[in-house]
Length: 459
Image 1 (cartoon, rainbow, N blue to C red):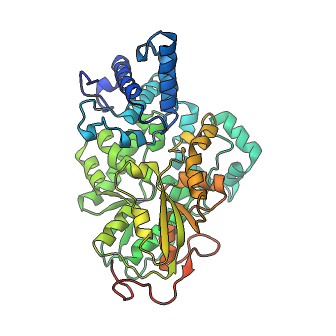
Image 2: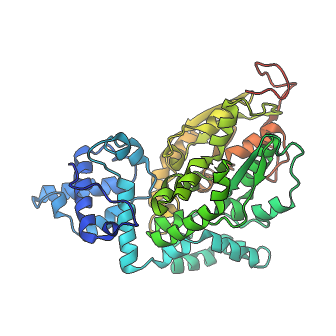
Image 3: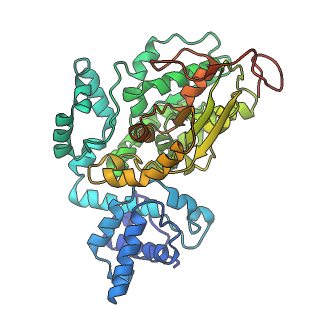
């Protein structure tokens, strides 16, 4: 069903906020999806949509034309913005198809209109400001913030107020943020010999899981890069988009573009530690802002391991590995797959001698903030089981994922530590450990068996 006018996904355009225009687009897209049904296994949105259509058909009261507001709301609430339907859909603008179908952005538009009409919910407000929560946690007495995350009664009280599930495995707040560690860190002697790179740390890495950021700095410096860590970077805005708060997300986009554009204008790469945040910088910022500066930042943004793979392809990546990593189960996050850049982490880790990487392409069903919500927690666990079964199907020595929120789900379901791939690379190089406990992997006997047969060989 070809649209009468191009679908509207630009929040700067008044038509984006027109309820009647939105309803017409929902009916058009839902009709196409109902006729196709390719995406039935991706997320709960599609079974809900198809069951509702089938119910109206069986009652003889119509199809999509019989939908009421509650039907649209129910389908929207079950979309967790994994983007996989767009990645697989044959009818998208990226495929130059006349249907121009973009289900995730349509769901976001519906959510944005609801938030503007009814206000952003308390639940979405609480989940929408991870950087603020991180800053408050750093101001609290040592360990105080983590009492809330670990205490069952306090978590239940928190759930009653904010709607964040008491059962979701929230990450602890680190005793030292990544930025504070970086300020105290002495760069490696070779840092800067191969250029510069800007680190977009992400909130989770900075405040909760700084080990991935520490490993990133060490690996980049080991390869001659001087790491720039702009202090004034802020949350990417994805949690706001999850709650439909386009205005707050736009404000954060403007702040980050102002901070990052001076580096982008010099051609300095911007590397992002979390695929969701990288997706937002690459894909959402140009649309939210529509400025040359936003497009320049987008063009210079790379996922961290995408950048490392680029170094490897240009024969600039040091291959002086000291440790093997064994058999690795690698979870490919949805928002990495949506960037259509392949699986750079798996490709790089497989370069480590005596290391085998197997990729599991299943969703963790956390996807930003959706899986943290009390009303979605159990359903999210159900949809994550394909991933969990994949990781339990073989005796992996290590399990890893680029997405820290997926890592939290995996750790909760399997009781296995799930470090970022850059942490594994850090240990393979034999650099300073970034997590307490035993070093990952096993020492290599003698020089790594590289084709060049030399220490510090380039691949």
